[in-house]
Image 1 (cartoon, rainbow, N blue to C red):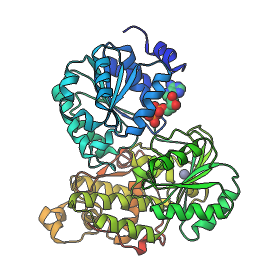
Image 2 (image 1 turned 30 degrees about the horizontal axis):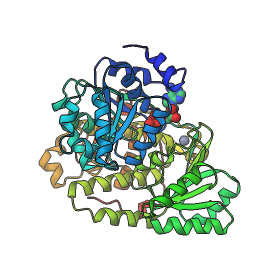
Image 3 (image 1 turned 120 degrees about the vertical axis):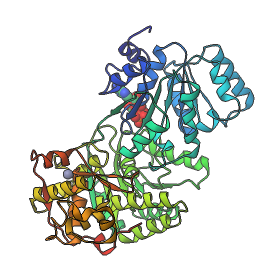
Image 4 (image 1 turned 60 degrees about the horizontal axis):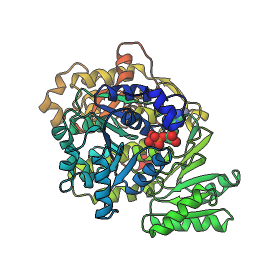
Length: 518
Ligand code: ADP
Ligand code: ZN
């Protein structure tokens, strides 16, 4: 290599030092190895492949799903005097041939392509004629149907390792739970990959959950205390983005709306106006925000319940990229949940449907829990975060707690004795000594902890187990019929090395809405 990673960083990007993990990832790639990179949005994933691409001989191929984003990224690189280009369906064939020629001449260091272009026609044969130094797969969670944004064209990326077995692959994503991560590694067939997991904690974002009644009033009251600050209000439907924007305008705020059905000029104009602080508040569907790098977004409000935790986390991550204090406010109502459940009911694929129900359920549990919101979020991403954050609505108004260590030990021990093969309901049946068909068939009535928790009602066990999942005692294996597995904190509790505080079950908003049993 011609220069050190630090010198390359300084020369092309003008930064003095790497952020945590960036250097380790770059070393891994330079050594010719595969890597899976998990970093929150804004964490600095791009440099992890751009720096090694610039240091090595040859060309790096970057697979990226969004054409608009691709253009922005390439322009930003070109402004830094980096030889980057993109190759996608918006170009004429003569433009494409020109890019091909430049690649052949070794004039391009980073080529961005969409997955469909990569796999179309003779493009792979063209790539085989180049000296490729690495493949970067951006938004890698799109390859997994366990994730929340599956894209069929990504599934074909499996063949990269077959055709280019010796070229290192870096898969990057800002959103993947453990199941999705394993699926990415398997599908891309990464070789002895190392997984780099940056912390998903965004301390500067204050998490707040609020019941959905009188949302507009509550929002207006909130906005009145924050004149001229920028923020996004996510809504479930296109119509509601328009209606809410109108209500805010009527109340004297600088607001507009954004959704996928607007024509592209209008969309670009709204986005620009937001970026330039001309419009302060954007009411939008989740179509808004991907790739928008606006540092001073002071609040993200979810007017409606998101359909899963990954999406929620990604959306709130658009707040406070400058590191300054910001708010994430989630409104939840049973009406929203009903609508989301109806959407899911209409899914054809039974397995996918069950997964979406389970993920929605997890989102509800987040909204409904009496547990530090940040702990729940970070444990969702398997971060084993064991303190309360002090900066969410639950921490600022904490519920009564009791020592639930024995309860947890009973549940953990039962979970291990059924070989971590059953979901919540069956585990409760074991704990409560219920002799139903599934229990008898599997011989669970013969295990030592059978009935060890019969003094606790079914509903209360559900509540406790849900708390334990949220706290990181257990995790849910979404790819194994939602079986409960013991997690890091659980092992410590079983070993007597950790205590567990639980909240008494309370009247929950969603307890009235019986959980779907897919
Ligand atoms: P991601 O792809 O993870 O969302 P980006 O790669 O777009 O994040 O990086 C987010 C921002 O952080 C960019 O403006 C980038 O230039 C900046 N950045 C990344 N790494 C560093 C660093 N080591 N020092 C300073 N700024 C950095
Ligand atoms: Zn907290």
